[in-house]
Amino acid sequence: MPCVNDYMEPSPRERALQLAARLLCYVREQTGGMITGTLRESAGSPYCRVDYVPTLCDELTRMNAEKFEALVYDAHNRTARALADWWEDHQKADVERTEKEARRKQALDKLTPEDRKVLGLE
Image 1 (cartoon, rainbow, N blue to C red):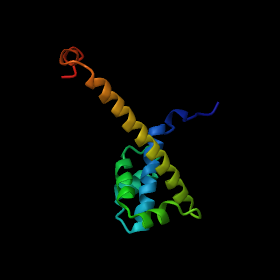
Image 2 (image 1 turned 90 degrees about the vertical axis):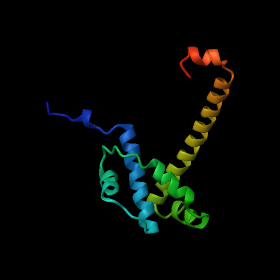
Image 3 (image 1 turned 120 degrees about the vertical axis):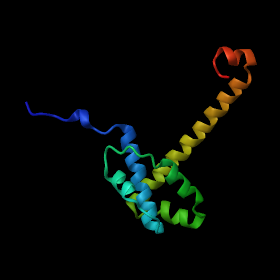
Image 4 (image 1 turned 60 degrees about the vertical axis):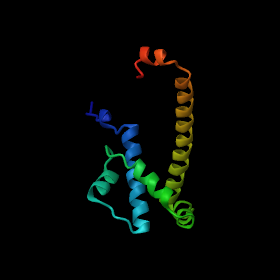
């Protein structure tokens, strides 16, 4: 029986981090931004551990609408389509996270100071 290396498969998190690094490279290539050696290495590594998601999100958010549309929604470019999918998923996750945080805050606001102390929240 041949040897296998299934246990070495990248985790879903590593895959997601690599995708973010690849997409950030694409954004910076298209906008003339700087691509560091670390970013380039992360984009090529299936075991990526550097989180470029906040950076990618920030760069897309700060981009003017015209540039954003041209870069993200270029239907003739496979990487742009991947970026559009990533962006839409990211926006949806942000909304869900924000709503969850609001519900948590609402629940915590109902607690008395004594409840907070017992729960170790203060």
